[in-house]
Length: 293
Ligand code: HEM
Ligand SMILES: N[C@@H](CC(=O)c1ccccc1NC=O)C(=O)O
Image (tube, rainbow, N blue to C red; front, top):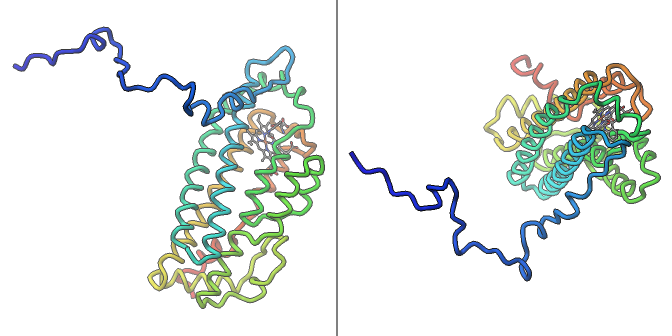
């Protein structure tokens, strides 16, 4: 039998030796904390309940982490739009893949907030006044980039001109779907011209002729595999978005039931209506057609 390997003295103490080469002096160097601006990030939680409610920190951090991920989602979707505009479809798919992973993380994250019981939430809800996720400009920006445009949403941001300007910009820009349809037209697919020079400040609505274009793509995936793959990636994006909305609705329902929202809406009933919205309707309709034409 081999002898047991000799342990160094730190291991024997169940400690790890801090190696000599490890940098410890950060007076003149960039450190982890300074790079990430942790001083600001970790002092940006300001509970408003008095006396301070234990669970308000959970509520704040759940929102803040979501907003951080929204920031990256917008960054990646904008990049995907630009890449598609430049006919770089494969690199655009890389951005979309990243967004899909973020969406999964965001959907999973609802389980943390679901540990907040109705009895706990009611103890600090009144302190929130009329604040509501409805006023998240980044969430609206994601909706706009994906194509769910609604000019009326801008009014909520009259008191925040910077947010309003960003949203107005995204309202006027072609959505991810608009960019994809334009790329398809450039590649010779018979996309109806009315979809290419449409008013992009409003949502796209269902177009039967576009279903026929996608039917052609799905009938012969190998004709242009990347285009086919992009169609499926967009389906994933919409599905993930709807699953996030659904988890929000169910979390809201278990925490406040059918109470009205702090933002003034009917509550769960209002959230339910968003589940009927669609970004890429033809990509779902084409499924009915496959094998049937
Ligand atoms: C206790 C937890 C939560 C409750 C009870 C809740 C409740 C609601 C309600 C009732 C609405 C409808 C608008 C209103 O009248 O207020 C709403 C909208 C919204 N909430 Fe929440 N929410 C919760 C957590 C969150 C979290 C963690 C996020 C993440 C950022 C979020 C994001 C949103 C967004 C984006 C909307 C707008 C949805 C839309 O326009 O369809 N909510 N929420
Ligand atoms: N609308 C929620 C309040 C709420 O959830 C909220 C309040 C302030 C900041 C963000 C929020 N999150 C999502 O709506 C409610 O009606 O209880």
